Length: 213
Length: 213
DNA sequence: GTCTATAATAGGATAGAC
DNA sequence: GTCTATCCTATTATAGAC
Image 1: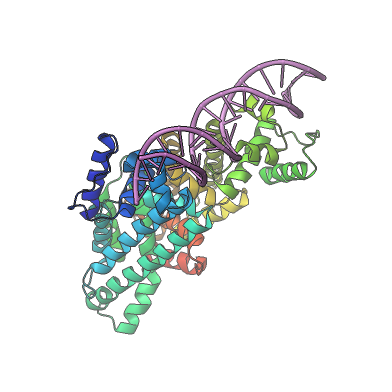
Image 2: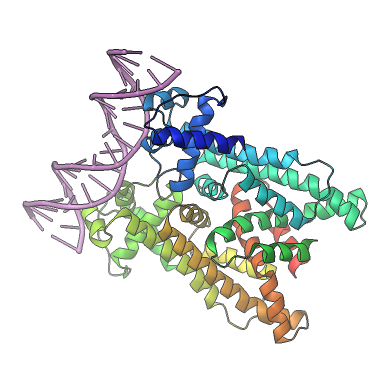
């Protein structure tokens, strides 16, 4: 919610010919303001296709201001990607730690969380693409994936023990076995929802529930 | 095999200071030669990070020659992506149409096919990223996904009927229900094998077999 | 700290000779 | 058809004023 508010103010500034008046209500730092504007650009045009001029316009700031916070375009892009992914992870970690969730409920929660914090899932798909050719992006994507895996595991363990009547040891074995497929279901959800015009989220989640639940 | 042979010749030419002597044994057209060189660049540096100068070097051809075949960098990139995906689809379609395959066998065949025709899977991950911001790339990725879905369906239908003792109608219902998850397992395989240092392909395929087989 | 103006260059595309 | 040389725009990054 904070993120969305800040972005609105950024767009307004850009429309009003870049008057950098940050009211007291906007306690978000300039750095966050820049990250918000850059994120909006990257979502719309992608990391590489976005020029720094696009960022200046979106943030309502000048070249000098932006470059005083980020030494290069790459540094800015990395910071945007890092913040986007850490935001997702914090959201997952913020759910009550011992709340058992079924696989489909977990997927629904995570995907819904993407939207809620104002980071469209397309940025994640872009990050995967960059990760294929850039070590810095690769590290971010890999770290995030490991983090999600740990989060998924923590949520699925109590669910498996409770619902399937397993001992803790058996639940661990079961969860560790299905975890890669569970992750794949999340990745597939993002990709298919972007690529398939006839993608049906409910049908997808129902299939997850039937196979993993 | 043809593709690999052509690429070897390209690299050799590049090392030998760009002597564009195409022997009679190389019946591959110049167009394919350019596509091969560009593909090698895109695999290594990505679509956007590759400059046309990189392509000239990798193909052993000059600017004028390349631009006489492709009017722009975008046109070339689109052609490379189209050829890569159609190659994958042809490989899938080339398998005997009525050969039943289990989900894990199917995945193994498709992923192995990627390597065999010399198109690393990283190019597909990159294509997904471009698809998030470029309509032309989006169309290619979407078409390919629909094609793979149809191919998977054709292979899984007889398997489901034979192995699970279903009528044709029941098999269709079952396959259509699990198809999105099956696709997700393929997508997840590509992503996780690139991102996770400890990715275990055999363990992954075993989990697919247990859950879908 | 921020802005304007500009330096420096990379990179896509073309022209014209051969 | 292909090569060399070049144009010229787009873009990153910086310098210096305020």
